[in-house]
Length: 249
Length: 94
Length: 44
Image 1: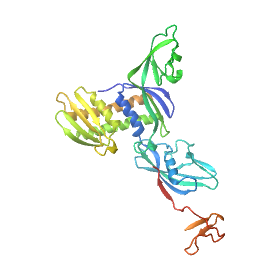
Image 2 (image 1 turned 90 degrees about the horizontal axis):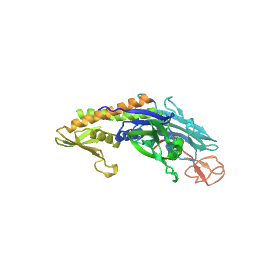
Image 3 (image 1 turned 180 degrees about the vertical axis):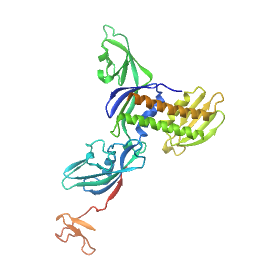
Image 4 (image 1 turned 90 degrees about the vertical axis):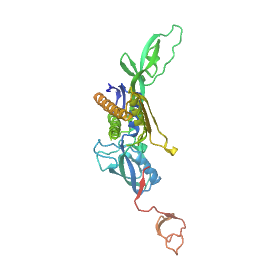
């Protein structure tokens, strides 16, 4: 059984994308979504050694904040789960310690954003710490979740049925996602999510296109969108292969 | 992935697939149900707090003298192929 | 055990005879300083 999948990008930036997949079952679409959220390992700080912390917050609070800083995740094969990279931070007040102040021992693992505030330091306050990062899955802790938003909706097909009757008021018809009109894909944001803007004076019918899903994926900067999707597919493939081998025994 | 057969007859199989959750089980179940000779396929998972069986148990019932274990193997192959074709299609578009 | 006097901000060493009192200014409020050890914390 070989299915025909067809993928088409609707919107795409480095960290956020909307793409249409045709030919997948709802079960598989959900598998991909869940795998993106929980099964793609990312780097995050796991233990912190505080050399000096004269800030107003406890070490434990700062450790939690540091843990939540998104870090870039190295390419597959460079690291395995349980490998560590050390980051250090040394900021003296009056200043704000930002994620950008973290200095990494490895170019592949860097803060994904430089402007995440960690703590505001007043005069004579100082934060000096060393942190170890680990590669883990989102299943274990949300800080290892590479996808900050991953979801899908059915692609919706629009059909103009009729004109709105002459003496009737036009009603707004709200729809979110991506619509298909004569094979053309249009994100609903283009007409303010209201079909009456795009088809004034027309009566419209909408229907879900079977097995066509529009995914919306946004990453925390650990890696580009393409990467998280392919890695999610890889985790499912790995588990299927494992099951196949386990059953053969 | 540890497998443990909990019940097995000629046309029915219950198997525990340790370490998996809905992510994989539902895809696998979906792949099983796409086969014509599968009469029924379902899985059951209990939450951690339930204190009892918390690993998913997959139950397969086949028609026409098909070995359920073989059906499971075929479904695993299907899932693998789905994942690779999806990735290839995605990479072609990306 | 090292403390810091809350009035004159000087470091104070306490012994078992002196009682709680700053030997420099006589102030009775002393603040305990954070240990200089490196502290390891899990980010959980």
